[in-house]
Image (tube, rainbow, N blue to C red):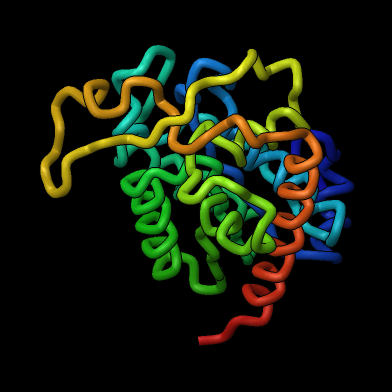
Length: 239
């Protein structure tokens, strides 16, 4: 049940079927020379939509902006602060809770470490505030790790490479403009670089070359199945 498409009467009836909502998070961020700036958000939202085809679950409209640390100097990246991200996450979930939702799945198409830490921190704060709430927090990288062995050819593929290019070829082929060279960032260990472009000029973390629309379809289907299993665990979780 997509919140932006249903009426208030349909929402009320939906609460008799489920109290679970998926809140997709993304980013407006560079994705190499060939993928659109909205790739992360599109991925998270389409994953949520695919999961809603498998089970009764509410899907909130995506939160488009995220915390982009390593890519903030690349053209087109538009980010927000950790404080803003946490406030948005908490405000949205608080409002959903007031509307009767109890189980929250915060899934992010953007998997940056500081970005995910902010969402996790927001969820942890809300657990103490909202007494009947339960939270699952994960990124698409967590779901990619659960894909069948051999589906992805590129070891360490993470950003604008084989996985995301395949997904966009399947989900939004018009948003794919050619390809980009294989690349992996070369940030120094332990040192925080001021000139991030020096160590990651092309904005690709992986290899787009082995991508295909067929892989993209398989990836989103497997991810939705995995997310559905995680929702099962969440809805039956007690601590």
